[in-house]
Image (tube, rainbow, N blue to C red; front, side):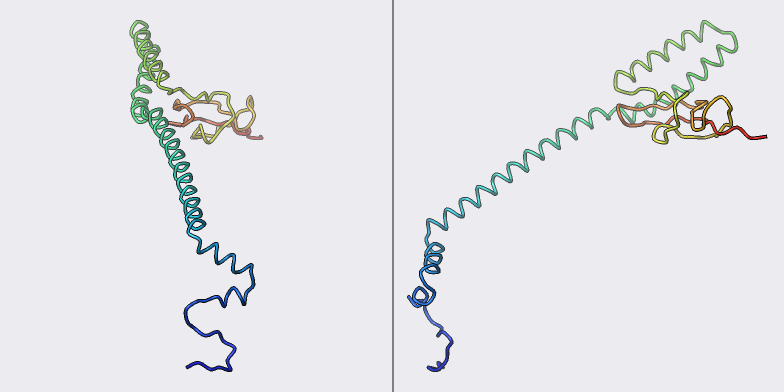
Length: 186
């Protein structure tokens, strides 16, 4: 039912009442929204924007994938190198024992093998971590002992118990070290 005294607009099909009631500005906006060229132009712009964003996201994905593949290639030798470090330590111990026993010929031959192993590791980016005389760095060193010394300031590596190694910027195995502490007062 419609009430002729009501201020409400009657439901029904749209006609020219809007343009007469709202004024020319609102009528132009409605005309723009219903104009297929304007609507299609807006859709085209939206799709173009989406396509450009998708292209940029894909380019970023490609860059990230390439960086990850490069990093994987560089650090792929890491697990093999880590497995070789313990036998290399045993080789060093054998060389030291033979040298202490006075068997110089065999120890010099084993030293050559040790140098070759270190060269091969270095070719793939694996290098020993320098520890002796360096300030203790928990990122590079594992402190096993605190050793009171008068000749070194506190926090300096005074003995290397096991050599540490890194591959490029990553630590494969930290150096096991003794760190200086204050000498006992007495």
